[in-house]
Length: 436
Image (cartoon, rainbow, N blue to C red; front, side):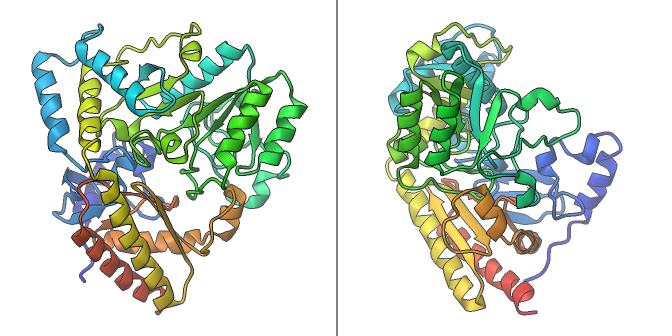
């Protein structure tokens, strides 16, 4: 295999940095393992194409939204039709009714909805709803879970060392960026995940003060880490017992684990849940759904572009495609091929590879084999340096993975040929970095 030449990407980054902060539209686009990011010209299906003409099998998929692959025909056609009618009315339309009704049909906990424009916004809105409904302000969140980039959401999302996290019984609240208010964490209690005993003890110690328990149903931003057997049901029981609102952040898991999200997959209904990313096939849009009495407690969504026609029709087209027979079975089949292939490579090179999947979310990491319990467990076991060396070399040969996280995405456009070639590249790369 020949290593890709990406000189045009390097030059483009040099020029762009003269005008754009960091030379990227989002810090997420600035890969930690590269001197410069690869600049793309277009994408189609499971592939992306860079400015040097190289082709990549893409498992980043826009950090999750491209569940139908790049430039999906069904979504493109829906958006084209809407563009001829107008892109923004500041008024309701019929498609908004169809989408609202559809979400109540497919998401188990959805009795009513509210629309925003990003994952960050929908979680902010859900937290405000929980506080308004309960009249309380403290929210429990968990180490290593990312819920957005507002001041309050960006607390204890990561750590360089386990020691930075502090006492496991009462973890530190970690501020992650300059300019973030130190008071951002005042109304948060940070806990380790997958430990019902600590959650219940905290609820007992703060009776009458906890507005909500906020969690990803699958811990996706670091790891990812699966919930222990009975953990989500345990959170449901504790939220009911102590009068807290249970919020599932399904911005990543929504539509990827099942059509109705991880709550459908695990059979646990939250009071509120948030969706974005994969529900819209690549457009900015998001939804908070939940119990009608909470959704209608007097907190109104008021963003300029909320419920806009473009996002609405894109979401309807995406859901229609995902509702076709065999879609989730296809994800399961392709992900199992990847799992089997990586386990065979682990044996071949005598290394530890962790690989699992839930729906279209594929988990890949180095340094351990068994399910980690929580963020601390993952941080202590994960060989982050080997993972980043691996994905850097894979990108040199045309396979794109997410940096650091170990969370990869499949789309309806991925094929068995993609899987076969992905494993061939992995074999080549591991032979370079393990044997040499």
